[in-house]
Image 1 (tube, helix red, strand yellow):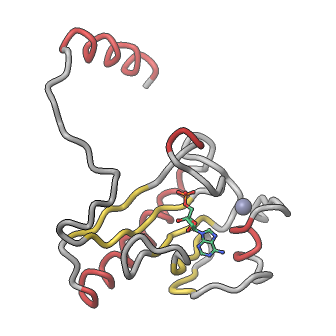
Image 2: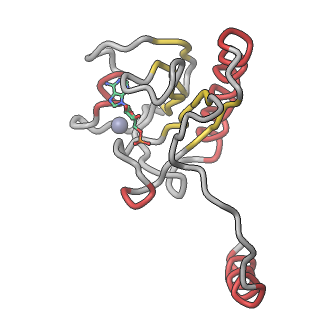
Image 3: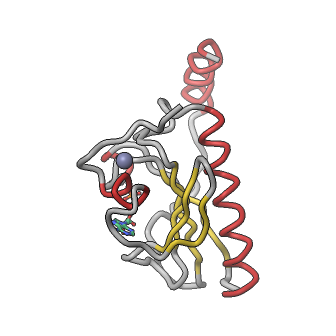
Length: 141
Ligand code: AMP
Ligand code: ZN
């Protein structure tokens, strides 16, 4: 089955070879390439070939393939760049910081003190509120 595409999407253009990228990997469902605005050296992206914007609409087998590609890239980042850590980050929707509405996982090498801002300070939650939301989600699963 052909992948869905969106002619105005930058990642669809990369998948189609219409604009260049530093391609790390490619298989039938995914592609991985370097992010051109790296948050740290080695920042890369594992991207679905088809144009599905977010986690709630992408087929399960495709997001699984994207995760496997992200793992391969992360292993290379760990062995070759030896960062202090690596975040795999996947944003859904502008409110979550998604700027390209075509599903991708960031492979983000981290260095101690790099001040990348997705870090948050954990603080104890309200158990009643956690339980109420838990019940709602559980009922939908
Ligand atoms: P997000 O904000 O999670 O949607 O991430 C989109 C990422 O795509 C950003 O980190 C951008 O730097 C990156 N990006 C945008 N255009 C390109 C491009 N042409 N080649 C490589 N990375 C890109
Ligand atoms: Zn696209």
